[in-house]
Length: 599
Image 1 (cartoon, helix red, strand yellow):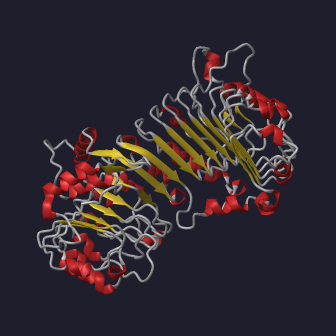
Image 2 (spheres, one colour; image 1 turned 45 degrees about the horizontal axis):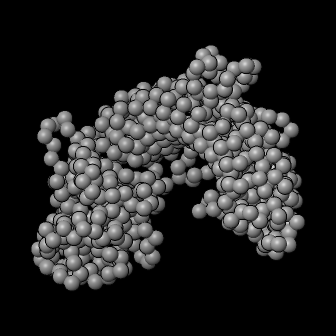
Image 3 (cartoon, one colour; image 1 turned 180 degrees about the horizontal axis):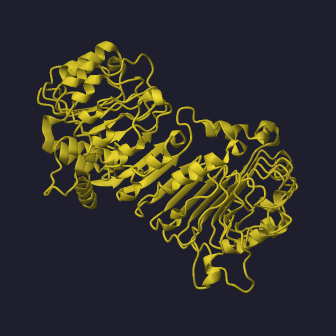
């Protein structure tokens, strides 16, 4: 159905197969999604599909595409040959003449690349919903659509064959009540319907529903009561706790019986849970062994704003949050955990027992002071800590390798990101015993540290850089008092990429930078007081690229064949030096970075 070179996603294709009835289970214990996954993997292994250049999706080989079309003949849409026997249509955004499809009565799939203007009108919508009542798949998304949007008409309730409906990016505030008549509907995707306020109250009537995606629906006030009766449900992207009692929303205990949920789920607005004891005991996350990604967010999903700070949280709120988190323990099969705006001081000890964790992200937990040991998680690859203003040490306990010198801490950790942790002073509270061989971070390749002023200092060694000998990429920024990179950094001899930005007090780079003989890329930006590069730069024979921007004084010294420091960098093949006259002081205050993060 898709044109050549079209990038599709594995999950989408499997759900389209399910909608067409192509997936057959041999026993009642089999799962349609699992069988579809097996089908996909088999076809991929036989080179029917290959990963796209972006590595996010897949494409079909041109020769296989030609073969498939020759077998399908006229059952698939071709612009030059519209006939009544067409079953599956992929409609490109460049076509507006939707009227040519009216004579096709047996259509099963109508897949719009993006909605053309003729369909965005009330007349166009009525034409679709009055002529194609035998559709099994309707993909009608509105990304960045211009012009009026008239929503989904009530007549959709007559589409008794419909199994897959994607109306992402739509601007409707509600869905028609008749949508609950679609008892064969298996997939309902409403992602980024930013005006959607509520889901159908009789949602339990959608007895075949297997997938409900509502990510990005920020104005969604609550979940409908009866959600827990959808025993076929396998994927639920979000559960939004009601912000007020008047919304008549479902409690979290609706999740109790949905133990077949798989993939990812985000529990949002947790700060609005009233009775923690009653609701948390029945969420039953521990029994949801098929979940791989879990987000727990106390942030207000509607405003996405922080209307509190660490000083405004009283002890009652702290205790409530800690009890809440303790009872939200997931199954050990979980691979990715995100916790946002948690208001407790201590993180639950269960974090150390989720042995299959690969990714951990903690952000906006302003009161958090203590984390359980993470160094024994065997598969942990990425650790991201952001806006943990009260955290002083990542681990308060004695490192495991001190108790057993043969033990390797963080055996799989590859990437660390630390942002806006203003009081963070180090990794371990316990000082390392003299004579103990360091056995930490053997796989660490990438580290980012931004706005952690007490972690990187130039008058002492807070970080034991010798622990990071495998590090290949380091980015440090927004360290406004840093005058020189820490001396211990010269021990990271495998470093290949170094970025330093927004360090307004940085005066000079040390001559020992020449010891970083593996360095291939160096970027320095928005360091207005950096005046010169050391002579040791000429020792960096592996350096392939140097980029300097927002450093007016340094740029003037690095001008080709004219600058004082030009002899130190002339050997570098790729130089990007911003001319001094293009320097913009506004970047000193991070305005560009802030604008980019908002976008």
